[in-house]
Image (cartoon, rainbow, N blue to C red; front, side, top):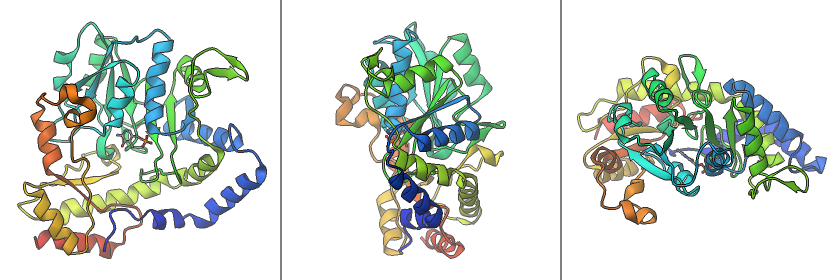
Amino acid sequence: MIKFLDLQKINLSHQAEIEERLLNTFRSGWYLLGNEVKTFEEHLASYIGAKHAIGVANGLDALRLILRAYIEMGVMQKGDEIIVPANTYIASILAISDNGLVPVLVEPSLYDYNIDVTNIEEKITSKTKGILIVHLYGRVVFSERLKEIAEKHQLKIIEDNAQAIGAAWKGIKTGNLGDAAGFSFYPGKNLGALGDAGGVTTNDETLAKNIRALANYGSNQKYVNIYQGLNSRLDEIQAAVLDVKLNYIDAENNRRKEIAARYIAEIKNPNVILPENPCDTAEHVWHIFIIRTENREKLQNYLTENGVQTLIHYPIPPHKQEAYKEWNDLSFPITEKIHDEVLSLPISPVMSEDEVSAVISALNNY
Ligand SMILES: *Cc1c(COP(=O)(O)O)cnc(C)c1O
């Protein structure tokens, strides 16, 4: 069976370095708010090109904390609206509603599955304070048009960069395109920890300070609390692992790009719609390689029988979830079509050429 993602193989490809750093951290006796986190934050900020990076507990918290900090700073208040793609992983939306802000869902384009910038302006009201863009599947969603809209209506651009670390638009990395960005280092992400981990990047010093305080009980100084914060910290063990793996992210993303290029060039089947390879290959880091097909269940079963493991990202759109009952009757036909038709093929930096060939043959023989 060709695994969708062989995490063990990915992490063992850095075994010696990771084990050394883990052992050092274990023996140091210092497990939170120490040098490993500080070092990783510095390396992450410099990799992204942003002034500040803050390690937090996970990707959802990264986004929650950005919005919470904007509320504490008076930039946003409860009841304000945040534009967000209807086609996303639900965490993007949870971060908004968790803060008492109102998610305003916008349809994606069928071209790249990301938010369709031409649908944004009609959704802007006097209460709109931000646009949360999601670089879904690892594909950059950014444009001059988006920047203009944000400037014209004085909206913050917040990036959900959980899936696109290492991608860039016109030489600027995702995580440095908007006002602030949330990262997930969930084990299966392109830069994955050995458990939950996340981060925020921003060039806004006030925002960075506030997020750091909010993630630490609302305190910048021990036992002095300026906010009713939470505990959402990156720990030393995860930071040590991430700091090793950050050195390899470009090489690993490049391997993903090679595999994606082969899939796009060699999969030839009228029942399969392939994703677009952007003209500038920097704009996609292929966290997920999705195809679309009308009878997904049939294709997925066929691939399983032929030794290819696939997953669905994602089977139920956020507006159809019980968690958001109030939206269940809304209609987002493009989002629904995507959720009905997408299937994710195996892609990872440790896949061999033979495995890639086997996936291609299986699809071409379908
Ligand atoms: C993974 C993911 C998140 C949440 O990250 P966690 O670390 O799992 O909390 C948020 N948004 C998107 C698009 C994701 O893929």
